[in-house]
Structures are given as C-alpha cells and as structure tokens.
Image 1 (cartoon, rainbow, N blue to C red):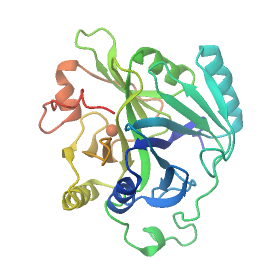
Image 2 (image 1 turned 30 degrees about the horizontal axis):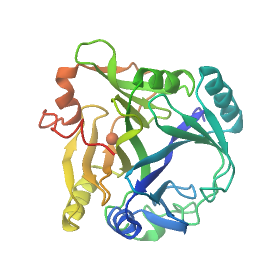
Image 3 (image 1 turned 180 degrees about the horizontal axis):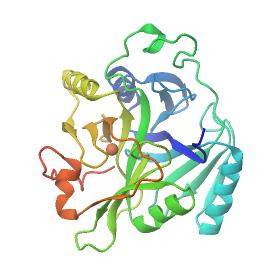
Image 4 (image 1 turned 90 degrees about the horizontal axis):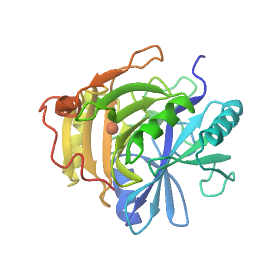
Length: 310
Ligand SMILES: [Fe+2]
C-alpha cells in the first residue's frame, strides 16, 4: 500500500437556502443516502463510501461552500501537515471530535490564501450502510441506486485570489500532485490548476478570481458515460436547471454534466478521467485552448462559466 499522506477530497459542507428542497435534490434526485440531521444541517453519503458522511448541507442566507475536507492516512501525517502549515504561515485551528460533524474525530481547519477553508482529518466512524464486504454484490444491498445514483463525493473547483500561493500550499505542504494547469491569457503564470492527493485526476482545482472564498462547483462521482446519460435524463425529468453537458472535458478527460441545486450552487456529476500517478508530468493548456479544455466537443467556453459562482 503506497498511498499515504493526503488521501482524497472526502467531504464538503455546503450552504443552502431551504432544507426540504435541498434534501429532495441531493437525496431523491442525485441519489445520496441521508445519514442524519442535527440542528440546521443534514448529512449524506454516496452509496459506495465507507465514511459516516461525506456531504453536509447547512441552512443559510446565501449559497456557497463552508469548507472542503481532505482525509489523511494517519496521525503522523496529520501532525506533520499541522507543523508545516504553521511554518508556511497559514492560520490553523483544531475542531473537537464529534462537534459540528457527527462521527468525525479531530479536524484541523486551515484558512487558505484564496479565502477558502479546508479541513484535514484522519478519524471518522464507519457508516452504517456501506458497500458490501463479504461476497459483495456490485450494487448496495443488491438494489438499484436511487435517482442519478451518485456513488461518492469527488472534488471541488475553488475560486479566489492568491491562487499561486494556494497551489504552493497544496504542493509543498500537503504534497499534492499538480496534474494539469491552464496558463494565464498573457502566458505569465497559471490561472487554474488541478491538483490531486490520490490517483484521481483531481481532488481540487483552484482558479484565480477577484472575490475570495467563491466556489464554482463541487462534484459527485458516477461510474461511467452511461450513468452520466442516465443522470441527464433524470435531471431533466425533475426539472433541474442544466448548465452544461452531458459532455467531456479535455482537462482530466472526464465525462460531465453541470447543473444547479435549488439554492443556485453549481453541482457536477463526473465520471472517468485518467488515473494519475506521482511520476506523471503536468499537462499544460494555453488560454486560447480553454474552450477545448473544458468543453471538449463544442470547444467553446460557455459565457457563464467564469462568472457564475456562489
Ligand atoms: Fe469538476
């Protein structure tokens, strides 16, 4: 087992305007499993995940992302990440076990230079409903999944200023791989970077943006292109506002649909993409090829892509 350190983007908490509409959307349409409720929050997981929950919604006045959490392999790495974060100069706080997230052990909350918060953690209880472990069926409990059948939390695209420093933190402190970059229009530096801690094609991407702490989208995983198509059918049957797709990205080579939750958060269902290994070189996109990088088939950057965020 060689995969150590930062394992994956494994949980996010998102702000929503209405709990009932959001539960219907995430549970009945996207097919996440509702794990429980506490106060103004509802907790979910994908059917193919083992952790207590991997997605939380919180009722608030404005949509957006409260934080993105990364699972770390062991406490030796967590302690090292804490020390290196302090040496890097970023604020870091300890969140007590079983406080705002049931089932979760100690988390370290880091304030990134782009205005986002990420949490780092090792310990989380196993969910009651997990994929089979003994002579398992391919589907949960031998039943077809609900709705779009999202199987796991996957990644997020974070917008904000100081993206070069943010990428430096992800690379130097959390030891993430830089998978792909989009160069700035003038060719000086990168305006978007895709990073991974695992062999997913990305766990997180960051784009240079004037306003801090904005989220472009967060994504849930589907198995393949067929499931992307079935998800698009199901979104349409449920009158979900589709932003783009079904389509393919040139960047990561993933299959994708972008759409909006009832609060206006952009959500993605994502499948495929190549497997990344730490010995791979970074793939580079020139800005005049951004249309092809994101909208591979139409090769045209959609007007709202870089401006509509929450
Ligand atoms: Fe994405």
